Length: 193
Image 1 (tube, rainbow, N blue to C red):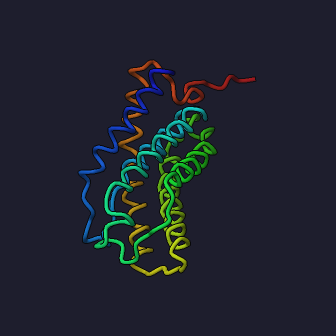
Image 2 (tube, helix red, strand yellow; image 1 turned 30 degrees about the horizontal axis):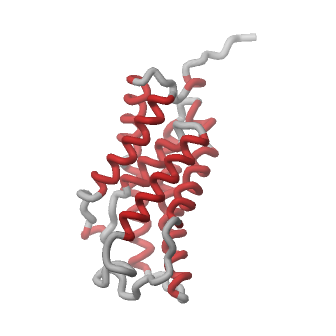
Image 3 (cartoon, rainbow, N blue to C red; image 1 turned 45 degrees about the horizontal axis):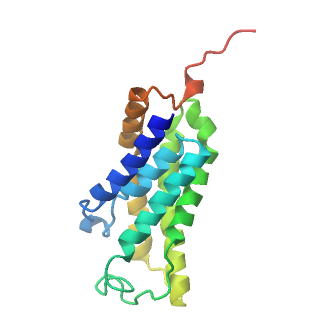
């Protein structure tokens, strides 16, 4: 189990590197594949709560560090109204919330029904983006939600969710190589009474 946990941490750190090279899909309202969030969500359903909280801390910390490196208040070409008071560390809480959401369906995942986790990953990304957008608008002191923003968040969630089977396949392969079972109840057979 320790080898699998270390492998998920290293995989999450590698996702930050790969995320830098993933382009935005300009034809689909500038939506993106949020690989870091997707990998965290898929890992969160396969590990125990302490490891999930560690992954949430690492993911949120590096996500905030990555977003804080740049012009103060954000890139002026992207943010018309720059954010002045968004505090470092809010992403740790958002990652933790997404992780607890995925932990809630862990019994289904352990029965071998990973499809529900794949669907919930898209819903969790949408909730993450909505919460992040709400926090930014709250700090700005006004709330504006345009149709383009809603479409961008929706398409980002759907695109991210479509890649969850690939991430689950990677996690199953890593778990097999680490001699770790991430779905122990799926192999059990019911005995007739």
